[in-house]
Structures are given as structure tokens and as C-alpha cells.
Image (cartoon, rainbow, N blue to C red; front, side, top):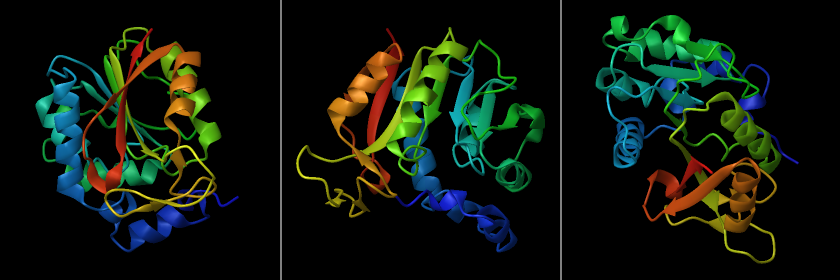
Amino acid sequence: MTLSPYLAPGFYDKALAAGKHRDIVGGRWEETAEAQMACLLAEGLRPQHQLLDIGCGSLRLGHMAVPFLDPGHYWGTDASGALMRRGYEVELADKARLPADQLVEDADFAFPGLPETIDFAIAWGVFTHLPPGALPPALASVRARFPALKALLLTLFLAPEGPPGPFRQRDGVVTHPNRPPWHRHRAEVQAEAQAAGFTLAWRDLILPRGQCLAVLSPA
């Protein structure tokens, strides 16, 4: 099984040294950030809410969400602290609105030090690059850690039921059942969400790269 390229030794160091902090998170910087914000606003995000950006990377969403939210109401986690710091330094115009210690290095979805008062969470393009087995414990951790959560927005690649093999998404990306970028079946994800204590609703949207949006609410 091929693991995520993000797990390759030296991946972040090489990319950051080359000035590619935007490319690391998939490029299409403004387009994707605008789509993220639009999805969050449609689900009810308001400035007074506290937002957790899981896999926030170099603050692609953060550079739009931080000015929108009340000061101190954005939290980000990522496997790479260096990537978050680069985004904080380069992409965030008003650093007074976000304490640097609210960007938390976390490769295990343990969410150390984050407050229980998180209202909204988003994991955009995170589980498209991780094996399917990563999702159930992550969902269980979110459910247990954030009792005030109203909604978790999750993007995944989906493929129809049938013989396993590559599948071309509607934006042209070819996804796979056994290597990144990974795709899943709707029924599998639905069952995993339910097991973690969520109800799940799919949104009929066309998102960058053909990802699909699931909105999970505490059951």
C-alpha cells in the first residue's frame, strides 16, 4: 500500500525551502479558500463561533477565516508545525487576531490543548490523502473532545460501488481505493460517522478537484 506523500521523510523541509508552502496544500489557493468559506457560511458559521481547521496547512482557509471571525476564534492543527508557521508569517495580514499558539502541531487527531468550546470544525482535503483507516478514530476523537460542536465539514473523494479500481472524478482527478488520492464509498463513510456518534448529510456541490462535502452533526 502506498502511503501519503506528506509522510515521506523530508517532504515539508524540501517544499518549504523551495518556497512552495501554497503548493504543499494542493495549489488553487484563492479558489479553494473561497469554496471553504462559502461552505462554512452556508452551514451557519458566524464571527462569534470558534472554528477548528483540521489540517490547516499554511492557512489557506485561515487567511480568510481569521479576519472574518472574532479575534482568537480560529484554531488550526496540522502534522507540520513548520508549515503552519510559514503560513502565519507570510499569509496572515493581521497577526493580532490570531495568537500563534492557537496553531497546534498534531499528527494524531488528538487536539492537544484545544478548548471544548469549538463550534465548527472543517477537515478539507485531509482524508483524501490518508488511508481509510485514519477516519474512524479521527471522528471519534472529534466527537469526544468537542461537546459544543455544531458541525464538522469533511471533504472526501467518492467512487461508486463496484469492482475496486481507479475512478476519474468530475474535476478530472483520478482517485484510487489503495493509494493516494484515496476514494471511499458513501455507505462506508456513513457507517463510520454513525459509529462515532454523528449524523451525516451530503451536500450537492461541485468543489475543487471533484471532492464531495459531508456535513456531520452530533447525533
